[in-house]
Length: 610
Image (cartoon, rainbow, N blue to C red):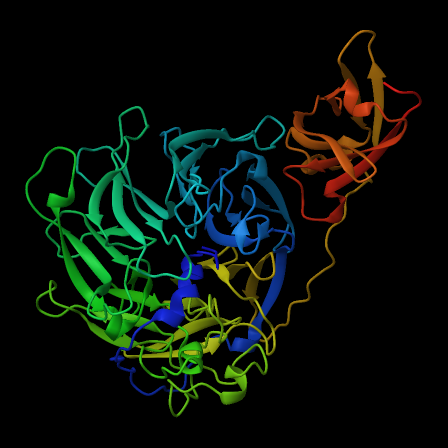
């Protein structure tokens, strides 16, 4: 979504058009003293500071026995719009939390526009988890310049080679060249035929300054026995959100769908559902359609704000229970700036509790109340609203007061403070801070700021709570679009952790290049020799990207395989080397550890016109 990025987040460009509404959120009981990790006991560790347009992050086992981090990046932007393909990379753990190696799965040449939140799952049943990648940019008006840029793909994991290096992933196109975008996908047997399907939402925000031209379609792609998928089938038109969750809501043994909706809610539709669930009805035994689902409102936009995400959280209130937690996506300071203060709910993390009839709207309570709440949670500091400072002076989640920004963003759950219960982890998104919500007791929660005073990590994806190194203590993982950075926070109560210096290669890699012109051939052969490749084998996963340049002009760029002897061969049109002088060869390594040595440069000389 990234991003704004949706990150589904970006959509708030249309905030200025919102109509009035009345908030109806209930704060939880007053806070009581708590135990566990204090907010200042977390130490930040940067995993990668060069993820262009860092977007979504998830954690899962990609390579056997490893706890891997998977991050998507939006890549280069111009005027807020993508100018090429994005990336997806997998990070492999090293000797400690400060040591990671990167394997590139999707690079810019694969032309996936805005790869979003990856789903880690074994698609083909070979025992290795694959990566399902939804992608697409949601803001692009119709017209002659509009181009298909949404897609659903999955990338087959072929495991490790005999030396322990990842083999190249294999791309499978499921729904290529779609006009709309996809942000999240669930792999689950929705129709009960014993074969897993894909459940997703197709979204198009179209013109960013308009709210009434959006298209939203809840879809499923029926799975086949050969692990392929049929074309998308519509389950709901005009309803659904970026990250649908498949769950049996009413306990009848059949799969329902729960969703939070941002796009497709017009300015005056305050009574329209922004949080909803779709009940499976009927007795269909074949492919599902809209007739097989009935929509029910959990909360409306006027009561809860624009929906951004919702998920079941186990054990939040008590062991064995399930709580439905969601986030809206608001900007109360911007609303105040345009003369409409208090007309929509403030930025909030909420719990939705069904009543006796689960088909009726659910009760709403706010979980994101800090220890020192503002006297008026809807108020915005005048100086902050008028541009003084980048972080709101209060402890409340508060988006920066500008169009295109809102908060909160993505969230996750797990034991954050090490006291054995379930807490929540939250991206401020439009608020440049990160937060966590402590479960104090069965009825009380408390909002804490994770980032250090003055620290900014805005428009973050991730919010993953996971034990990355198997020491029994969870780490907290985020990726910031603002900072192009993937980072984790580790908790060592009472024991400050010093971040060691970034690892360096054991031996410098020296790249050499030669050129050969064969008689009467239209192409020349550039031979690149990485002489000390074995000194740091983790830097190469079998492919390198070679760019041949003359001055500032690129004459050839290609992704090529590296031989066992560390040689890459590039064919260059003879006419591209027609100028005499020194040519530069820039080699970038995929699968590299994240330090500057992941790029090498060599030179060769053309002594006469080719």
